[in-house]
Picture 1: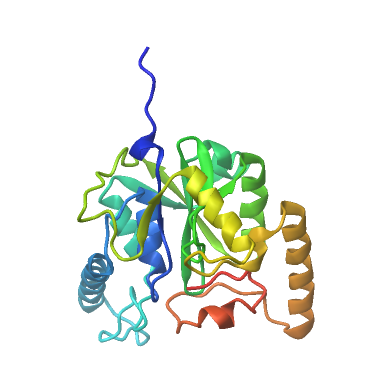
Picture 2 (picture 1 turned 135 degrees about the horizontal axis):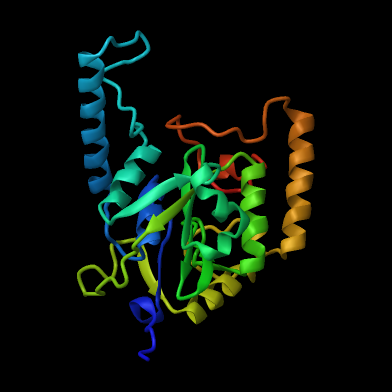
Length: 269
């Protein structure tokens, strides 16, 4: 019996936040390699826009549809879920809303799946199983954060409670991404061993360097995070009668500093 080798030689592919490119980072960490650029996603968005305009022109049309506006990429670079779906379809991967009946088993046993995409307002990030271990590949982190399979379910539930849209990714994930000198780094991508990732995370938690901003809750225990979540939810409900961090699509982006004060776990583009 041949032993299965670790994908990418056991390395983790992570991209640190660059401008408003979290959708690009999300897609690439799902695929575990620098497969797409912002120009690739922009081309997909343009193609989707053209198809939508053709459909509206051929059909009855509505007064709400503005042909000149893009419904798949905002002026500041936030992409729609349709763009991410199209990008992953190239690799024969399917994106399914977690609350869909098709994803029922994933809601019960998420650790048996391989990847999830999370979205709130203007931020996308990926939670991915690599070589049997789960990691949070949020581009706001300096390195992937290891998640135990026991914490995974609670973490997903916590995100849903704060209004995050969660999508399941299923299909045949790329087994390996050739690491050549030309694509080993695309300006924000990096290959890390699990040990390196853990070391960088600990280094950031102690306040010593590390590229990228790490939300405060990253350095707390699961129980501490849950307590902080509850406090934030109560505080937000007292301040504002509107839903806590209600999801939106393709709206004007906030700055990371603004979004890290909104009680939605500090995650933003």
